[in-house]
Amino acid sequence: MSVCYTRRGICSRLGGRIHISRDSWRFDPTLLWKLIKLSSTGVFQLLVATASWTALMPIMAGFGEVAIAGYVIALRVVMFALLPALGLSNAAATMVGQNLGAGKPDRAEAAVWKAAWFNAAFYFAIGLIFLIFSHPIIGTFTQEPEVLRYGTSALHIIAYGFAFYGLGMVLETAFNGAGDTWTPTYLNLLVFWIFEIPLAYALAYRFNFGPDGVFWAITLAFSLLAVASGLLFRRGKWKLKTV
Image (cartoon, rainbow, N blue to C red):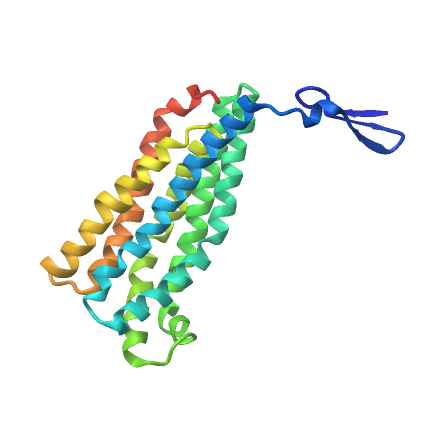
């Protein structure tokens, strides 16, 4: 006989069958409200980060349709390349929650740093690939010379920030594992809206970098995210967070 323990003995296994007790269906408004609060902030956090890519579109629009087309192609390649980082970041957040629950915050911190540096190394390699092969990669999706030129430039410049984004993404997401969903939300607002978008406009139009100014703003934002996340994570206030 084996027993599966949850909050109130939700399930048990007797004779090879899983039996779910009536208590497992009991409505728990307190627990539900905690889940809603945590998840809603997490959704807003992700929305803030991803919407910033779209918010750069009006800045790119000033350089014509071909510039937008090149930017969109490069953006799709970047987003596809960043998918593994999402998995590793969520895994790091899970390790934070598990180790904090076990009363071992130091082990949680060590696990996050290990995952962060591994992610940074992985995306440093991806960035090198994009730097060397940006032209043929974009050429897979378009043969229009001007679109190809803008897309290649976008992928080439954004690749410089890949190692920073790999590092910062893990450190930022680790706060979620401790139940601190507001810190990464504020970081996303600061980095992607207050810093990146005005900088993109200034570099593109005030300093005459053109579309490359937008691409450099993205790279610099990645770098700032990594630095800010690292400093806040090292302070360790997340270790005192209770859910």
